[in-house]
Image (cartoon, rainbow, N blue to C red; front, side):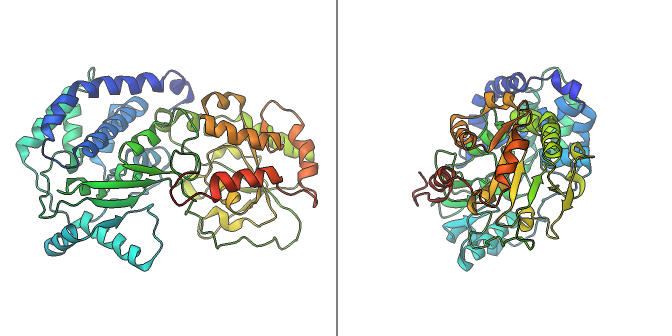
Amino acid sequence: MSDQRLDRLNPSTIYEEHKRQFALISPWLEVYYRGYINRDKITSLLSYWLYAYRCILTCYGIECAKHFCRSDFGSHLRFAYFYEYGSQVNLKLKKTKCTFLFRVAAELIGNSYLPGGRIRSVYSKCLWRITKLLAISAPITVQAPRKAELLSKLVDCFEGYNASVIMKCFKDALPPVFFADQINLFVNKALRVDCSASTFMDFCGYENLFLLGRRLQVVGRQHGGGYDMFTDDLLSFFEKELCDRFIGWGMSCSNERQHRYPIGDLPSTSDTGGKRLIWVEHCRVPSIMFLMSPTMYLQTSRRTAIHYLYNELVAAGREYSSLAYPFQLKSSDYVGMRGNELSSQSGRGEEVFCANDVVIFDVAGASLIHYCIEHEIIFLLVLCREDLLHFTETAKEWLNVLRRSGLVFFEDEIHLLSRRLDEIMSDKFDLPANVKRYHKNMFVDIFRSGTH
């Protein structure tokens, strides 16, 4: 979608329309899912599916929506990456028939794990495999009249569109979790699931666990950067709606120390012994994200911060390296401005970092910022002032700490970064003590209870 067309869209208006339409059918859904133990989570997941489908309609049009519904993609977002950039990351699980093992596992286990969960032992790894078995072998039973009844009701949420076309899309693509029968069990004790709740929003098969006749207590975890930084992040909102408890990496209401980057994997010192300057690029982001997380999308689509950063590096006369996303997600925004290009064979950007590097980011929600925090690597942020309007109070507090230490720069501060680099790149400069202390309290030394 062109930037000009996106400018004519208002994410808040589109989401409010979704809420209005979904509220009209919510009383009917309460009756439809009566008796389903996880009906609240199924309903929340249905709301997300419908909103994400509305986003595809709005951003790409009805023909693209039909393409999505005919495709093998369960995830609207992964389909958007494929549609815009050719990125073919599809996580759909292959179903298997294993009724006996399903029954044994579904009745006996009390804790389970899915992708993004905090897996710390061989035992938890075994539980993760058992949970996957539950999902791929769940006996799904669909009664055609019940499915038809739901589809007919959901079409009402899309006033102004051709009802027969929308109905055909839903017949092709609506996941069975929304209309299949509940899977009755002898045991009704709650099943705790430790995971990234976005796993359910991929609609690759794990969502079928909500059909179990056991209450799923979802402990959802942050699995990347940017959580609770922006006031308009609908994607995080939908994810949290599926959680009984959501655990962030420092900026959320409940937090634990991040586990994406192993604490024991300490970065080495660079071979040259001197500081390297590394510019971390953001990836390409599909248009649909404008309706899911507007501030995050705009940070990655504006080029003013990139041009400012490049001009400041040129003015400073500093040699620098660039770390771009691999393959199809490598952004074209940096063409002609890259330094020495770094790469990792595994695709994990943190593997190229050294303990004495100075890393520059042009988005505030980059996951690698947490790697730098974990290992006290000096990092700088270059942002647009307009972004400040959409940060949460917690994010603003963090940015102010960095700003007061001269580590945050705005796109209109000509020559400020280039002058500051002379000091930062000297051998005498280290991460300021107040920043280390703040990061330790905010992101590292988090109590076992999950709060600061």
